[in-house]
Amino acid sequence: MSAVEAAVEPRSRMPIFLQRGRIGGFLSVVLAGQLTYVSFEAFKGSLLLPLTEALGIGVDQFGILMGWIGIAMFFYVPGGWVNNRFTIRSILVAWCSWRLATFLILFLVPSLSFNVMVWIAISWAIWDAIGWPAVVNGVAFMAQGDQGKGRGLAMGLLETLRRGLEFLMNLVVVGVLFVYPEHSVAVMRGFGVGYALLLIPLIFAILRFVPKNAIAHDEKSGSTNVAALKGLVHVLLQPRLWLAGLAGLALYWTYVNLIYSSAPYVKLVYNASDAAAGAFGIFNTGFIGIVAGLVSGLIADYVFKSSTMMMGVALTLTAVGAGMVYLLPHDPSMMWPAMILLMIMAAGIFMGKAVILAPIAELHLPEEINGSAMAVGSFLVYASIFWGNPMTAGIVERHKDNAYVGYQQIFLITLAVAVVGALCAFTLLAINRRIEAKTAHAAASTAPVE
Image 1 (spheres, rainbow, N blue to C red):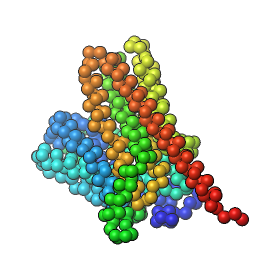
Image 2: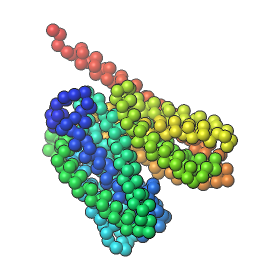
Image 3: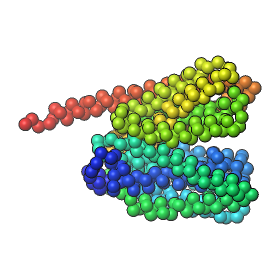
């Protein structure tokens, strides 16, 4: 029994990570996965323009900074070694501390050079490649026990709580800006600093509530560095991990397409007003995401009893939604049917996104290398950022004069990607069940006969 399993004895039917003794650690890990982004990346949706004004940069420069943050993709695999080498708790504390220090520099140093901002963004990319896998691994770690039950719900709650917290915290800033529009720079700087300072109590909470997990260790050499590297290589050679990663990659690619197929779609194809398109975009990519996370986790654990099955079903639902939108004729009367089908597509995407890395936890890899599995999985899952955004944005841009034709291409791509992803998920599910059946049969055959 591991340290975290020994910390809590199940006392109720409540999922183990929500029981007394673990809930503090679970919430601390979840908050680390959101508060580290809250003073910059989390502002990019509804507060992009006031944020750039407060930092004294243009939207184009903000895009450059986000591009540098995106190089985190290149560091996920070496980040897997770090996650094998150090505990979840130590990684999260270091990550939060660095984000806190750089947030304060960003918002408190007057006339900060853009070159300095670039170096800060690069440092964030490196730390994100280490810290985010630690968050996902931490959620799986706090949810372990009960024969693996609860991990799907834990991953779903990670997505729901992060989205809900971001929505509420941004809503507060928007409300203050509405009251004091003439002081937007001061308001954004104030909230940038204030939200960053929330990392201080979070660091103490992590130290207090998150137990130490096992790390890699080589019995022969006694070197944790060598053991961490061996663990990373072992993870890279797992075919099932690649299937899980490819299913997640497909899901995230469809998510990227959804962002361009919500508010922009109803505006460019059906000439909806900015207000109507914006309202639909907030609902389709915001509210549905909050609800779908919780629903997905519950279904994964208590109906399908498998996050891999949930991923396959979610991708199938996404394919159905995208395919049906693709079949709609270009007619103004089709706007409402299109919006309904886009909501179905969004429901599938966000239900899959809620458990996007949970299938990796279902591989039941040793605790000491699970962090590297999450890191490699993150590399695969989020790789579509590199081509998904420029490809979809390019299609929209090239078909400005006939947006319907461009979106037909986007929905067809989404359909094909979702189908391939669903096939990967269902193939992985079949392999997992065959392995579980063999293991159960072997255990039964070796059990002592009374």
